Image (cartoon, rainbow, N blue to C red; front, side, top):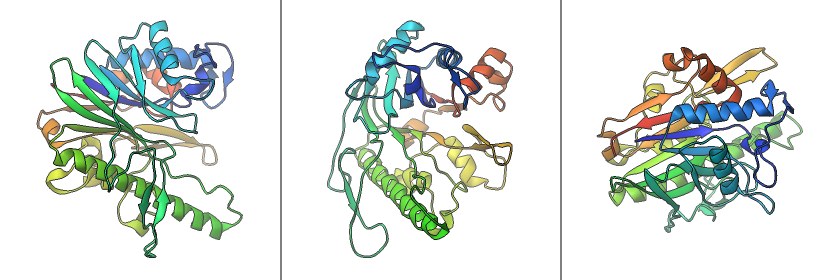
Length: 333
């Protein structure tokens, strides 16, 4: 079985309020192409992945006028994708939902949010001391993770969590000191969200459940200028330690060889420096029992993956579709 995570940059912009695909000639300056070209590129990538399920990060919006599931299922039908069913969890206010697009002949999936005293439901609040002042701070997810109960055609039960963690920019800062203060506060909030997610993972692992956490964690070893203040990245917090730790091959490579070449899942243009920045932001973390099945991770990077590089249509589609590249995992379940 193949599972994937894919952050599709502002996917919502490719749909109207009725969930219909907008494949027109409107120019997308950030993507250096038209909306029609991005639509076709996304379809090309999803078809090439040939995954049984894809965790879509930045999925189309759900609101009073818009419906994530309708938009995704309409997109799949238009391009005859076998991942033709969609499910999402708690909606958010960012116009970037988290949803699973899946092949219902290979697995079943339902939103199944959990809650415990130490890790409330992800649409609620977590009380945690962020700054060691003996006072609890209230933390909320701007994009609540999607918790799924999945069963494969073979009968294997999985817990699947899709996440999009992001430290907000220091909006409203008027000087350097305010930038620093707001940035550190936002960083603390992201780490608190990572702790929240780790607590949920620990509960599943203690219950001997097979678990995957997948998505865009927007953080990793060496990526954050404030990392020295906090000791660990949110990726390391979620992975955990000891017998209950999760595992991601790409994260392990990055953590184990910080001065060597790193795996990359995203590529951003820095206009002030006239260059591209590459980063490892997208992960598929698995529990020990799934790791024992010898899974195979793959980053569909247009320049680093030989199969993508040797297929010009796919290589171009990956660059047009998003500033992130998909990550897949293949395993026998």
